[in-house]
Image (cartoon, rainbow, N blue to C red):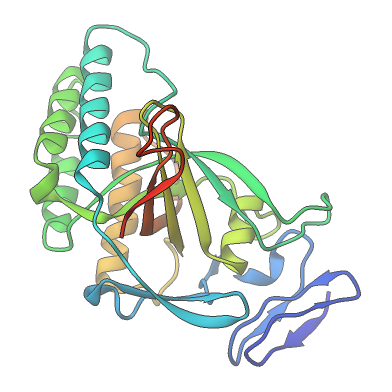
Length: 279
């Protein structure tokens, strides 16, 4: 391992992956070890300081760029919410949840060549959902904590009620997920890619189907530099995950997919086939 100093640009040298950002020292590592500081990390390719203005800055294509976030179009929101409610209703009747639909996003990333591959490009299926608005998130976290021991049928009713109030409850510029498997000694390919280049593309297996082009922002639960709101986000995503799947022994890394572009990728539709619909 070598400690390498960078100034505003990323390079590839002697087959080694070198991370890039201003005034950052990163230890080059085969599985992303250099992204970690002990048991935690800070994602240095994203600047979320202007998120209140629906602006996120990211280090993309060798330079810092600003990206304006957009709200989901009605066609996407209607499909997503109706599908989620239908799935919850099916579960309440004893039906197995289907894998296709808005929960399981196929996430494409690129940027880091791990030692076990010749490719930087990666694709993985990630469970995704909505994030409450900033002014709602503490209230929702408290509600989830207070109702976590209720019977499963009651919890399904609570989740359905949340989706029925999506317009007023959720931040409609984001999807969220968890990074379940990355550790300081072995980063998943999605993790090391997003730490290097946060551009991420989400596609859903469904008809209709949609494609989201996003900037991924990763938050480690043990990072002492998280803002109060970021801490609330980590709490929420972990709570909503365990609310449905059961308790876990740790908090996982939170991933926020900040939406920049939305495409209708539905086949057999002149308004689909990869048509940009927002902005």
